[in-house]
Image 1 (tube, helix red, strand yellow):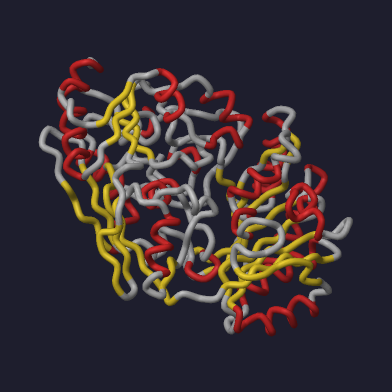
Image 2 (cartoon, one colour; image 1 turned 180 degrees about the vertical axis):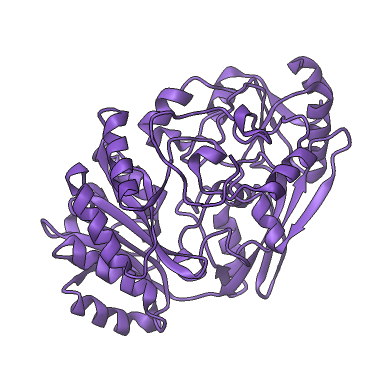
Length: 462
């Protein structure tokens, strides 16, 4: 393996070995995790290569094969699992300049992998449409990064997570072989590359569904206790006649920690944050009143008085925003699924409330309405976090590990014979993000050894 000969093989493609630029592009938002900060700090690529076209991606893949060069694909690096940090040096394959809308029509948008979700939403809005689902990092994240690194996001309460059928229509993938191929994956085939951290081929194009644009209203709701907040958040998800895009329940004092919310949240109150279609607001107001709550702030999407879209306080952004007040907190991700969802959340809350205030995102996963979350733990050491993990597991929950940073360790991707065969076919030398997902599980790099998590999905290769 020679970096010089690899770079010399692709002289016309944007490349740099300047230490400052390489270091900057070798990082993502793993600083959210105190465990990942310890294990990933200092890991950098040796060079950054930035193709500007699909043809250049193919040329990079061919050169990587010829020179046995590890490649770590990335978009804007907004992920908080550390999955775009190279574990084995090599070259950072920066896809953020592979941009543009390829096609947009009724119900469909197709874009190059480096196109930001914000640009796609803007293009869709010009046609009277919007994405079904987007991440809380919509302003920065690329569509390729979202598909290969994300799980769900804003809109999942109605449409489910990315792996659910229909949420990714198609992907184009470049293989890393002597003669790289461009493969078109459609329908359920797209699940192969979803949440794969760039290990199962280089995604260059993504096609996703669009729906008619809605007039979304943001709602910050204060409730007297966490039980009432959970009850309302779950009811939002269950109410079939209510058009919604977001519903999350956060225990006091999280509403105080989220600084832009603090002026609106009464002392001691838990909160629900929601996005509701304007025509559904009368029904939502009834539900809030019945739950004993009050809408304390809100407005049209992005125009509420707390200064930024409400979805920037949900999912991964909740931790990011809360850490501005409490930099010493962290969390894990319990998977809550039961016919009596509020009852299960209440049961777990009673067990772990001493470890910190609880947060809960409500979404659909397949046919089920589910919750995901845990308490915010004051991080002293790994044992403090593992206390929450073990408590949730003892109550029958599955727990994903946001501090693991490899595909199997995080536990949000189903892995079976199809995925293993695809890995061997598209990356026979194991050059893509090596250590994060290998055909032979024993060759995966173990990023975190401290948390006894088992992932959300039952069917995993061993």
